[in-house]
Amino acid sequence: MDPLDPAVPGLLHAGRLEVTGRIVTASNATLYCDIELDGVKANCVYKPERGERPLWDFPDGTLADREYASYLIAEALSMDGTAPIIPPTVLREGPFGPGMVQLWIDTSDEHDMVDVCAPNEVPDGWLTVLRARDAVGDPAVLVHADTPELQRMAVLDVLINNADRKAGHVLTDAEGRVYGVDHGICLHEENKLRTVLWGWVGKRLPSELRDMVCALRKELDAGLSSRLDDHLTTREVRALSERVDALIARPRFPEPSGHGPAIPWPAF
Image 1: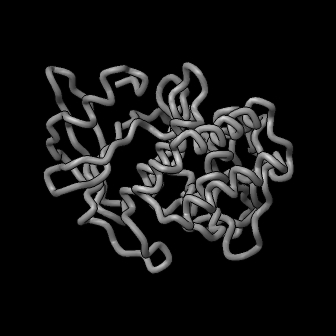
Image 2: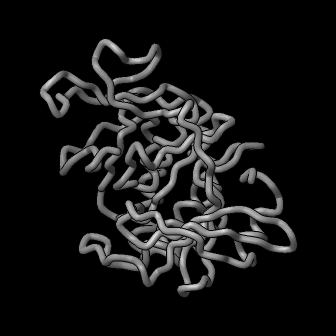
């Protein structure tokens, strides 16, 4: 189902959920569901709060709240006529209690945006993030595409302080549209940015991304901060506001902080 379909919000909020599978590679309960409302059908991911594993460094709130707060920010950052980088997401009751429900994105292997390859096999126009060696000791590089969509995602990650932007959390649908998923460990008050999207370090933000960040500043002042107060701590909302202001004052892709790993493990 197209994320921009006007039926999506109502479907996610009020549709009947039927659990049909579980994503077993996820560290928290992640259930694959059919959802239906008035003859409109789609698939979605349901993450019940009761299936969350406590995290010592994210002691406040729920992962579901952080996923939803991240979506609200992505929605505020979305450009006219484009879907937010994060698929439509709601908080609601489900078969196993309250949790996060997010529209399922059917992906295409033809449009992968992040990869590991030999140094002489980097696709034209792609950016190198790091150099390493593979399991047998041969040289390898972590690379990603250089596209406006990935730049938008990288800026979103800076703003929400994403601690877990793995390659597997970057999805591309059959039309080539890019989405980010799994935002349960975001929006901490301390700098925890860990991402595979470091290819633009130090480069100035394109004008459209600077405008996007300024628009988020206005949305925060116009009421978004109050909405986020229901899902984050006061300190976390304040830290978000400070990150927005810092990126407006210095509109460049940041460097790793040097405190802790800059790339999540595993990277995929």
